[in-house]
Image (cartoon, rainbow, N blue to C red):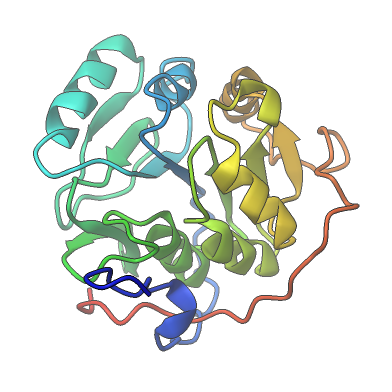
Length: 241
């Protein structure tokens, strides 16, 4: 390791808490993870969605101070509401909550349904917000009643969390290489056996808009010839929400 370079802290270096028991309500949650390598990726999906879409939580690699302006711009272009997440915001249909730059976003649940926690903590996969952090909390709270999407980006953030989500029986989608600026994050998720299906971004938006459950039998299948790595899940040691 080069002098001054901190070791990479990943999701599997943190303790795991058991998943919550299935909730009585069937509220669906959509989680999206992407990086800053393509400024149009998230815009292409969110601006194509109707107000009836399930509640959306987003982790996008962005520095502190930029996400509020980014969310406001998307809100002005979209039929759904888009805003920077605040601690305690409820996850509601027709609303997309974007993790603030420099903070992690986690999903939680109470008697009224799902809400988000905005928390500080270590860099995970060298990112804050981290897609893995959000995905693990979604797997623990929402279980099979959610859809997780990983889009263009460099590195492997999101691959471990996506595998945990798929292991609950939930649907998982990776953006197809044809529409990615950088195929790194989707490719790593595929290599770990975390992906049910691959879709170009315009079809991801159509899938969400139609309200379908991303049935792997009806979508373009992920490459089953790639090596599948069995990943043991873990849960984040960040402040409890």
